[in-house]
Image 1 (cartoon, rainbow, N blue to C red):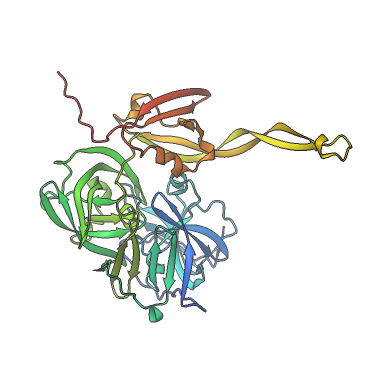
Image 2 (image 1 turned 180 degrees about the vertical axis):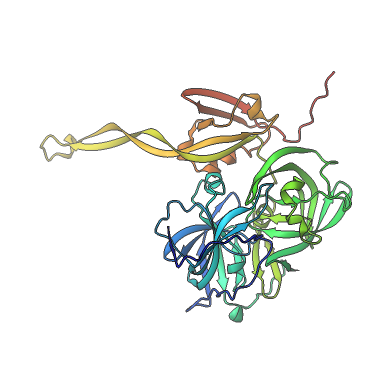
Length: 451
């Protein structure tokens, strides 16, 4: 990586929750009124192609960040960054601040939209990397910098976003749509809703977070009545924040309501308080509304007018499910796989009569590098733990299918099947091959009391 016009590095304590406007440039559509950009939807997360200083990368679209953040850039040595200085960032997680570089005057291109003066941050901590969890390359996250300059439509079913010039955008009349007022803190959007926990219905103020694959995160607050203690729950790894891993409780709530839209039996995570102590500084914030709910709608963000418009799509009635296996997978590098290749040859014995043509099929082998899907965590008390699966086990087959022929999210989909579904795995542990079999269980299954 090349850094130009490097400024003498100095230490600046900088929290992501504090955003200062530095006369940033704007994204513009030079010759269009709107632009449609296709994206990949991986575990509910939107992965967009973005060009930075002439190099094409992949970014998560994340309404929970105010400035673009670059990471996982070890393989992009040709990427040039301008006007850099050392800073420290803080995000979710119980760890310390993370060392980073702030870079100014960068050229960003998203579809046909361009910004010639974008500030961004570069993080070199190799632990901050979405690629292993998603199974596709991800080099950074972008949010407010893009949303602030357009009316942004997100179509989760057809997997595209539209960037619309605000001055020419016409909102269409829609009887089945609901319009919501947004509030903003540090350039991040918040919405008011209601949650039903047991018999209690409570108002909540939630960050809209397209960069989280969960449904809801709720911050436990006994004074407000938000607690997981009265519900069935299990302890789990919730995700990785900028400042470390986040663990907590996973549960379900009876209902989540946004005006006339009411979702029942909704997944809700209650993160450990130490991991969210900085997020809780936002006055009256009760948690986050995330992509497992947002993907059930066609979504329109209008940041300038502080509006959100939702319309149900065909995902709306999907059941909220948890991983019922207890396995957390990552794609950790590659493994060498021996593949059979069939090749056909024609032999007509030097004759022109078609009846004498013989087609021969020969089998050859070739060695190739394929994704290695590795277990990184096994939930305590889960079906996976009961059959002896361990971190660092590599899954080779699942229900008879070679995992290297599947995408990571396709493998994970097996673990969210119906209760009672049989899962058969062949794994590699060190140099040994082991076969295991288990049934998916209700994650809230009552524990039997000892006699």
